[in-house]
Length: 140
Image (cartoon, rainbow, N blue to C red; front, side, top):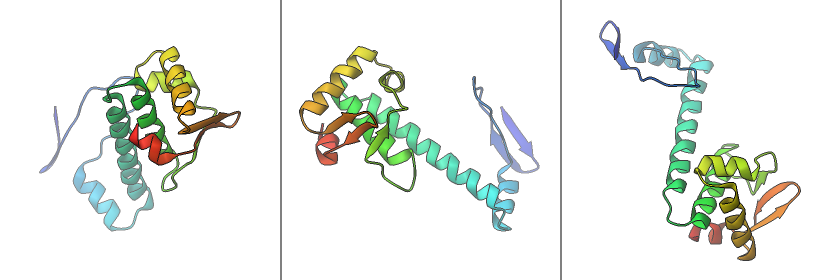
């Protein structure tokens, strides 16, 4: 449904379990132009969020469970704490969380992590999942 503020139209979409905030493009551009840090930060956060979602979708599209998990681990390492690239996925992100992000069974994620560990791509320890060989992980 088009939303209009003079000649500045935007599109709105139905969402659930989320808060949808709309701001006419013209007003957002004006706020950014005058140096409003909050407006610029909102745009940056939105772009980072879209990047993470796109990377997770790409991981979900991979052919094998190990490739899906490897893709997700790389995506999380790159997008959890930008601009830093993490080498450790925190233990707070449990295997069940990874499974939910990939729409996979917990047991399948567990087997895939074991296979990646056996190949030397990751190391599991109490702190989380350490990306031991990023190149091997990306090639999976």
